[in-house]
Amino acid sequence: MKYLQLVRYKNLLIVVITMLVVRYALLAEFMPLQLSTVGFILLVVATVCITAAGYVINDYFDVNADMMNKPEQVIVGTSVSRRTAMILHWTLNIIGCICGLLVAFGIAKPTYSFVFIFICGILWFYSTTFSKEPVIGNVVVALLVASVPVVSVLFEMLPLLSYPIDELRPMHIQFEEILLWSLGYTLFAFLLTLERELVKDLEDVEGDRTYGRNTLPIAYGLKAAKHTTMCVGIVTLCSFVYAQIVKLNDVSSLLFLSAFVTIPLIYVLYALAKADSSQDYARISLCLKLVMVMGLVYLIVERCI
Image 1 (spheres, rainbow, N blue to C red):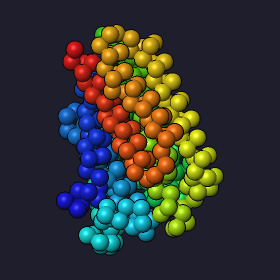
Image 2 (cartoon, rainbow, N blue to C red; image 1 turned 135 degrees about the horizontal axis):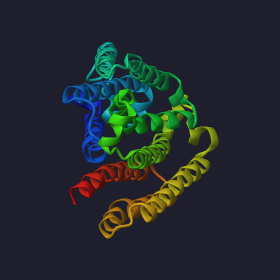
Image 3 (cartoon, one colour; image 1 turned 30 degrees about the vertical axis):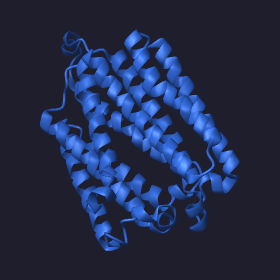
C-alpha cells in the first residue's frame, strides 16, 4: 500500500481514465481509431510509468519540506528507503520509455519516442529546480498534466499522415471537432491544474519557507499569491462559461456542467477569498480535483446520451 501511495495510484487512475475517455468517447466518435489495442495499452503503460516515476522523484527531493507540511503522508525515508525510491524511479522511467519506443515503432514514427524521454527529463528538472521557483514550477506541472490528452490524440492521429488523401476522404474524419474537443480539454486541464498547484503552494507555505523553496507566496507574499490564484480561477471560469454557451448549449449539458463544474468553480473563488489556513486550501485543492474528474465524466455521459 505504501508503494501505491508513493506513486499516487489515485492520480494514476485518473490518467488511465483520461486516456480511455479521449480514445473511446472522443476520438472514436469522429475518426477510425488507428492504434491497435496492444499499441494503446503500451501507450497507457508508458504514460502511467513515467508519471509515477515523476511522483517518486518529487517525493525524494521534497522529503524535508513534506515532513513539515504533511508528516503523516511522508513515505520516502520512512516506509520506503531513499535508495529504494531512486531505484523505483529509474525502473519506472525505463519501462515507460521502452513502451513508448514500441508504440513509436508501431506507428512507423520512431523519433516520437523522444517525447517520453523528454518528459522524463522535464520531471527530473522539475523536482530538482523548477519546483523551487515561483510560477515556473506550477506552469510546468500544468503543461505536463495537459499533455496527457495531447499524447492520446497525437499517437492516434500520426498514422493518418501516411494515408493518401484519396483514402482519407471515405473515412469522414471530423478534424475540426477533434481539434476543438482536444484543445478544449487540454486548455481546461492546464488552467485547472495551474490553479490547483498555486493553491497547494498556499497550503504548504510554512514548510516551503523553512526549506528554502522560493514559491509564489514566499517570493511575493500571501496576498499577491492569493490574488494571482484568484485571477487564474476567474480566467478558468470565464473561459468555461464561454465554451459552455457557444459549444455546449443543449439543456442536458447546461444542467450537468452548471451543477458539477460551473457552480464548484464559483465556490472555489469564494472559498479562496475567505481562506486563511492550510486546511482551507486543502479543501479547495480537493474541490478543483473533483471538478477535473467531473469534466471527464461529462464526456462519458455526453457520448452515452
